[in-house]
Length: 305
Image 1 (cartoon, helix red, strand yellow):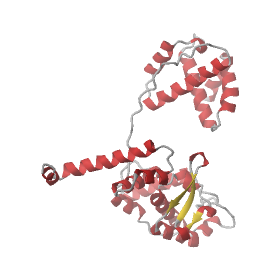
Image 2 (spheres, one colour):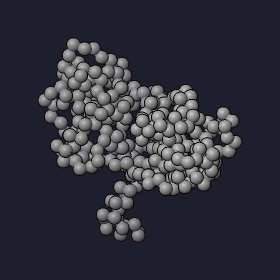
Image 3 (cartoon, rainbow, N blue to C red):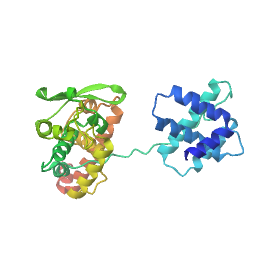
């Protein structure tokens, strides 16, 4: 839904326009994109029922609308959240008395196991000959991502004051500005020191920056720029998996658990506030065990004794 269409709906629905302007912009401490997507969700509902005022919709109307949307469970769950928040706002402002979303169950979200790289694939990916400042930077970024499991946004936002390489630690600011210290291995420290010594100043030129990883524009590197580079590297290396910077985070967690690391430790390292988020990696480890078990007939024989 484009901005023009959104404006059309606002014109015909005063309450909706007020909701977007007042509530979403003040109550939601979120990005402009999130506000736009919430607004679009409500406007799509209004567009679906052009001859009804959506403040008068019944529970059955909402259920029918959600049922007939040819979307994933995740998208339908977001629709329901957006619509429910709108009706809560109308109740709070005494416009309606009953929320038609009450009693509607959230669509079941399919738990999609994240893809990860094998140790061989990681070694292949990280085998970069450093012949330029960009190579040094990219190798350091990949090594740090895999060694720490940090998010790509956390990596891009690293500043020089976050590095405690003598103590083999990096300070990371995660979601909700939550701070954590993560250990870093010698291989990643070496790659980082090589880049800091021989690559970073060349990329900075005459500029100055607090950020560790610098782009061709002499500013901090963006997630998008790194993602583009990673895609290109995977093509060169013949890695066919659907790759993203996040895949190194998944690989880090999976390899740790496969090697017997404690789930709570992995939770701390990843900066997950809830351990259930970390538990998805135990499914990956179990899945791997089952595959190994099925591959080796001897294991089946031994298990009967």
